[in-house]
Length: 277
Image (cartoon, rainbow, N blue to C red; front, side, top):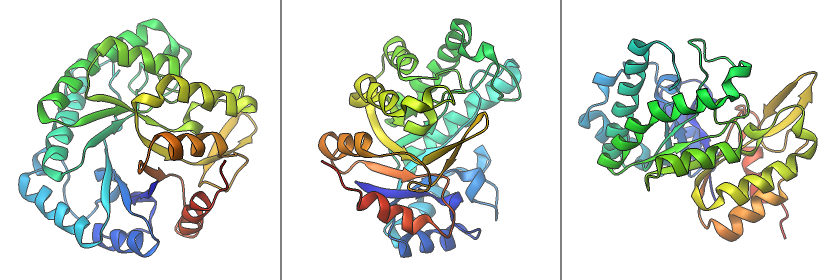
């Protein structure tokens, strides 16, 4: 495994300061969400130039940290056609930028059928799924043109809420450039969390062959919510997911999520030293 971190989970600072910390804490790769990480200058579409890509590529190489995922987590089911066009353009810009940046994967979640990007019962309907697929197709076509992987991350509270729905999206769009970011905790609800290992096993069966990146975190149940945290900080056992990646995904990039500056390095070591069969 190549274990990385979301740069915006590192203590606030310039992108170089964050990269220095990532290197010192032993991370080999990073999830880069531009708007959450870069505060010192614009990262609007027009700022994502070849020059900026070259600058970042050299900066990441200086600290020997690879970019595992360029995050673009926007709502591709937005009901306003004007806003939707802007969102699609943002994906196009990220895919173009990734091709210059030397980053193979642009990652996304799958939205909600409202402007607020908020879970509603309608999120899990066939109508919402088809809206997402329709709006997502041109994004995947753009990924094909730039030779970049577009990866979706199933999340229980979003339109693509389980591994079966994700498999449908893969089959219906049918592109070699469409892949999966597998985040086991994101597939959990309060109701199915009691059998979380079954959920993870099913996801691996459905999506394992399409999985190019893994996101890792932990969880606890607080009232009616699944509350996530850094790996090792909750109730989850990692045998199933780690056995899968160690046996079937050699050297896969795995980024931890919801860590804090105080527990990030500990969490990395927890995963590296976790006893697997």
